[in-house]
Length: 290
Length: 287
Image 1 (cartoon, each protein chain N blue to C red):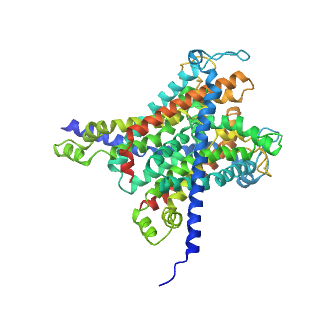
Image 2: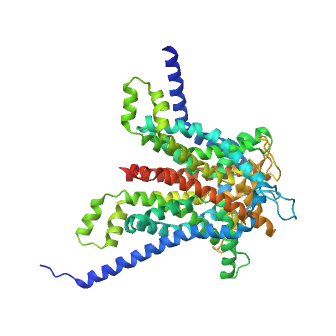
Image 3: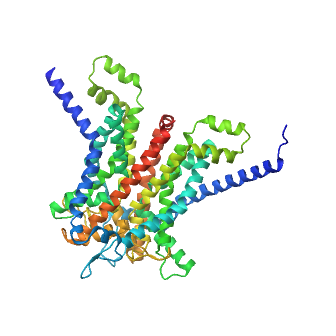
């Protein structure tokens, strides 16, 4: 009997420990990033790091201003948002409200498959098809631009947006629709003014998670945007994002050096951005569930 | 009685039809890339797909032919390591959330699981780099496995939780009623009942990890030679695709397409299996 109690205690503890593991891992990730990255701020003040205009990590003296990288990330993400949000939300409305049952299942399966395609494959296709297309269309010297990145990433954000928004729309009670139709509203008026309105918190969460995926995306962006760490003046210029910088330069730095610390500091910036986005999205998601 | 304004009604009808048409167009735009990716990759890679491609090693630069046997093996080993590090924790965490998670603390754990799934994979790779590569002073398969393990946790945890929640309450109560302690009920009754769902959910997490490239770039690094040594750099399908896609040789690009097609097919099969096994059950639970 005593042994049984001990065994029970151990297993219960193990389950609890595993339960809180995601909290531990998130905390550890943040601590490790701080530990390796904070030292850059002894040399470069935090405002210079964020807002200086030059990222020349290996010139002499090195310059660590991540403004061009932040702007690169913002430009690519904004472009992807402009494309994927309207299309994603409209698709979600169609799948949830208009499509017949069979069509709905096929479309959902298809869009979830799209979400599962590795980013390196999407990046490869973007590089080979979209790059030359953009180059010819706008007569540029290179087709690897912020616009190519935006279009490529739009297709990576879309599955997230569609699938979460669709869940939120489906969760709207049937009576709302019936009432609207009974009042003489057309199908579209019901969908847009009543259902979409009721599902709004879920749709906001869907958009935020889609955007979160775009900001954290690395491979596709690295292959498609041209990787020039310059302040972009137009969407038709090559840009470089925060993630691509870490991926491209991490392997070549001296461990413990300034450049190394600067890359970890970029990691801190990425961590904070994605933490905020996911946190707010989570709050919105719980709003719908109530 | 007020007269019905037919003109306005007509206008509303037109608007409704137009907007419906627009939303259909959106779906078409959203789904096109799926077919495009599948068929384009197939068309480009089909000439690379033969038996040699699967059983041979990469040829030195400049020679045509060769295969990706080491990358296939590497991906299998890296995923095996990832499962070793990630899955036990995920399954226990899923149990915890399903059995004890109906309170504020459970909500906090779920919140952090979601946050973890939103952290860019490159950042997870960076952390695996400090944890494993720096102390070992070498790129290694082990580091890649740690990164993939962490990336698997959110998906595997949440699907395990969902699947355990699907186990009928009567089963749990019956086990507890005959005097089984809570943990034994969980491990001997609940877990086996939910096993099918958990297995496919776990496969989904594995499929996702198999497609990761960024966290492997400076952990497992890649290797042009056959290596099963966990303490050394190891090849993987995704890094193989990346390296060969960037290369200026046509034959390499062709092989990258071949590898991409193999990877996509593997991931599609796993996803379809998941949908097939959980069809109905999962949907009902959601509503």
